[in-house]
Image (cartoon, rainbow, N blue to C red; front, side, top):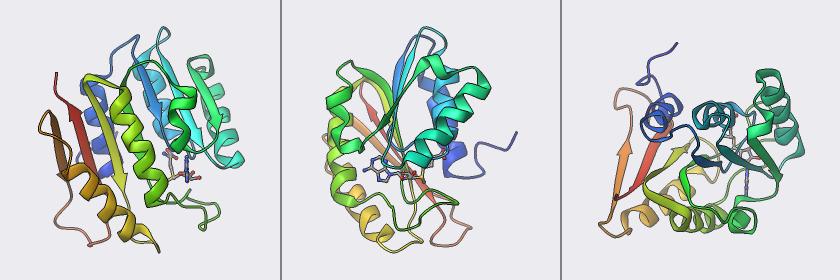
Length: 188
Ligand code: SAM
């Protein structure tokens, strides 16, 4: 297993494991190939639930395949829709929401997350978040539009009231465009 300090996604999994417990509810706002969805499904256990969103059919079917192979499909509701419609599908409080921004590796690089819809979804995510819950946002700036999205997400996060703990975690000895992690914890 790679070190949790090896990169933004590994680090997000480390933090998720600190807060998500069996029976919890969680959201993967950008399921892609399903790695984060699978990780959340393992953490919530058989009595928990994960909602997983993506706008691409390929992403939903890749995630479905991964979950079925792991025997975890029953814990996850897959939603072929944008995360900006989060509250249309999720009304229960959740312990964690994961965003992995950018484009789906190995797929159409023109389908990327966009600042406007990401911010819309993040606002809904903080409203659904339980005290002690976290939002983990892996941010990529190496593609067109990535820097603008990163700036807007950081401004949104920095303006959250002090009852939230907001962290930025980045590898300093990597390229400027290496993915980094923003964490938002709702005070307990
Ligand atoms: N977490 C994924 C994994 O484990 O493989 C990788 C996610 S990938 C970096 C970003 C995903 O966001 C893409 O699959 C893309 O289709 C999806 N996406 C783009 N806009 C979206 C939106 N408005 N709502 C939900 N997903 C979106």
